[in-house]
Amino acid sequence: MVAVTLTDIATPAALVDEARMMRNIARMQSRMATHGVRLRPHVKTPKCIEVARRQQAAGACGVTVSTLKEAEEFFGGGFADVLYAVCIAPQKLDRVLALRRRGCALSILVDSVAAAQAVVDKGRAEQHAFDVMIEVDTDGHRSGVKPDDAILLDIGAVLHQGGATLKGVMTHAGSSYALNTPEALQAMAEQERGGCVRAAERLRTAGLPCLEVSVGSTPTALSARHLDGVTEVRAGVYVFFDLVMVNVGVCAMQDVALSVLTTVIGHQPDKGWAIVDAGWMAMSRDRGTQRQKVDYGYGAVCDANGRPLSELVMAEANQEHGIVARRDGTADPAIADGLPLGTQSRILPNHACATATQFGDYRVIAQDGAAHDIWRRFDGW
Picture 1: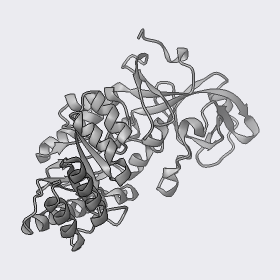
Picture 2 (picture 1 turned 120 degrees about the horizontal axis):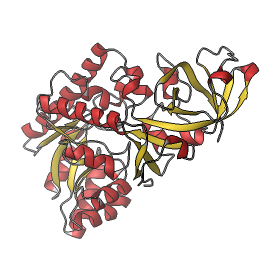
Picture 3 (picture 1 turned 90 degrees about the vertical axis):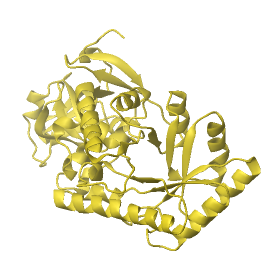
């Protein structure tokens, strides 16, 4: 596309600062190289082929997805090594099989004997050996089997003896998002690593195969002191970062590569409000920073060049209206002078995944501040 200035872009629009994104990619890839493990990025945050190609070019191996639609889209975009990191429902095995028969090296996930048996039964009926990982729960945050639970070996035995390919174990320390000190993050990273490695060792001791040990979240990936026994790390939001990650402490505000371009459409001077044309339909309803040390409302406000406007946040949001005000709640009538009608601002998101999904494409901003490209983004399951 021909480069356009921000004033030529209809708002609200999702902007990707390409230089920031590339620094984020390089930082994570360098860290994984230092630890001697593969990086399998989780592509659920951008859901964009162009972003994943840049991660691949930097050295990433394969992709992690959270929907079969993602698996289909990324396989169509040239990514054949795919891990579907959500426990499989038996009803979805036909779609998995279709992808695998087209040449996609798609691995699936189970965390129960019932799910393992369903995979085995489908494989026998179709004369096909599925590639399967067992999800391990290392922090009590979500799904998975505990590393020391007897059921781990039962699941492994059902898969291996039933003809499926037991590839290994994986875990995700999602509770790391609630932490905010280096010490706590390092401890969680070690808990994640240690638990998943212990599960793998138990499977091997029982005579079951366990080639892969897959761990990861952005906070733990950037905090782990070592990754002994791990073969790959999965992380996703690092590619854009967001305000939750700023509060966690693994990035700074100037690292956040995703923002929403919006325009001032009115004022309420007595309330200290500037009203913009990006509401929760653009930012999402995610208030993830509300429980953290700094509450950014629906997002932090920057000028059109991406420089933070100190203490201003999107304090409230309706469907298509956002209310920009001081974070401390002070009614500052000077906001109307600083943000006159027609002024463009960028709003940094609380949760990059949730905000990105409100848009069908990204406007890619280069060093000169102009939009030089449009990258398609997709949705669906």
